[in-house]
Image 1 (cartoon, rainbow, N blue to C red):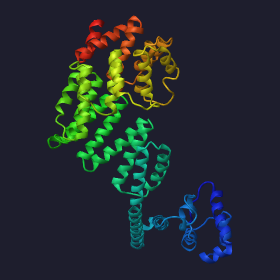
Image 2 (cartoon, one colour; image 1 turned 120 degrees about the vertical axis):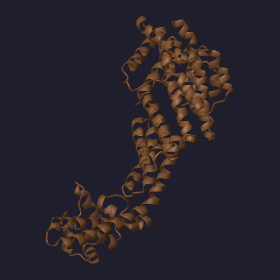
Image 3 (tube, helix red, strand yellow; image 1 turned 60 degrees about the vertical axis):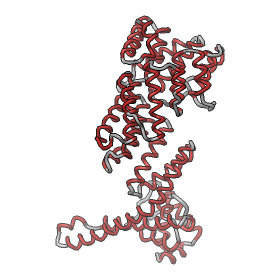
Image 4 (cartoon, rainbow, N blue to C red; image 1 turned 180 degrees about the vertical axis):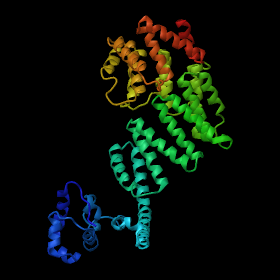
Length: 487
């Protein structure tokens, strides 16, 4: 059996030439038990048999990964013991695979079929044993790589995370451990989410969920994956899909899982999505039915969902919502957007004091600061300057593009910027041409249709009035005043 090579064999010859600089061809021949003229032939591009490669590894300590594909260091003395043992196993694995390939499998039906079958069985048994050994040795290495990869993502060290991902992808090919493969795909989903590639994040998160479903089924761990997947799907405005996924998971959990904390969280999230979708009555009912929640972390999430529903329904005003003390960055962002929707300078200033973050690089914070300048302090110039570079360039999901177009239109309207109508037309184009699977959030649509009532032609204003009247009938008491005006 001969070794296969990269299409560009010059790199391979360069690695052999590197070895020839350390040892003469005569010394290489002597140490490996190979005829010198054969060594010379290999050095000049002749096909190199696996036996010679194995001799280079065993007699000269050459790293087979470096020799074959140019990865890693040239010598095994430069790598740790675990990697060295793994490299030896890989070489044996290649040899075992070669043994299987070299068998005359067509003779299985001939008179020598029993001998061939025995040889095949021996070769496959050796292959399986080596594979199991490699899997055992790569497990700890894969686990450590995944720990480091996740830690880098949590610290937003994206360059480091990209390097760790490449290493993990290589090791993943050698490790059959299902739990580690699941961890890897969960980490890939998180990485894609941070890179704002929601479609790839959903793909990997779906695979994690499918693994859970095919393994332990819908247990508590599997439901956590459902929550993560539904949360990611709703973040790109595929609200109907997210609701259907939540409902299916709750149904599959059955009577036994109905009281699990994670089941109640999924039930509450489906209610929150219903409120974003356009039905406060149904959404608030689900959020309330999901109580009581035993998990302290999830209690806070569900409490914030309840505050959101009560605000949208008009059951509480903004001051009462503040008193109810919701938690987390999502709650803070939601309160700021609601206060902006009210267009009440006093309440918006109060929201900014309580919920506006300190990160001067965060796009949302920068927008809210610009809105504060004009709504609270009456200073139009800073808002107009901000609008010159808003929205910033970059690939974003359609719903985020819509949010930015709507927010930009509103801010341009507040400071009487000359491009307010141009921004409004961009928002109209986005929502009118959106995929039918997508549904923008309720408050983003409300801000858009308020812009329509102020900036749009008569034909558009009729659609806006229908929006507010219809939503008021479905429980959005917060639209009472504007719905009555629209009527």
